Image (cartoon, rainbow, N blue to C red; front, top):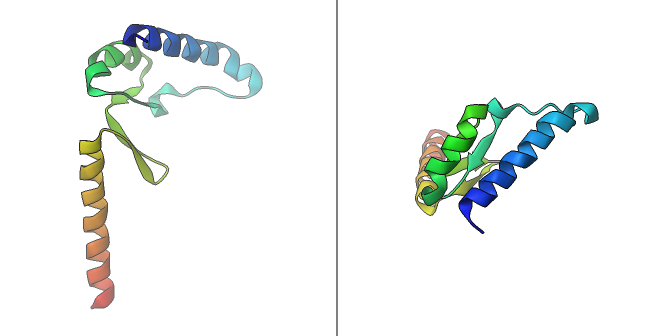
Length: 93
């Protein structure tokens, strides 16, 4: 499936959610949304979704884990490991 088709479908679903969500007690807050996409789709996704206030990225922390590119995941894991090494050094002292 082409990227433009996926983005168009995603935008259509988001518009439906904005229109119909409040009647079900849900009001979308796009400024709190993070759209994770691949590097090759990043510019087109930004063009389409940043106008709603969404953050468009290639990787992000999610529920204690990470979603996205392997490079960004490795960077995130190094940060976490470094943090716990420092915590361990404080505890051991």
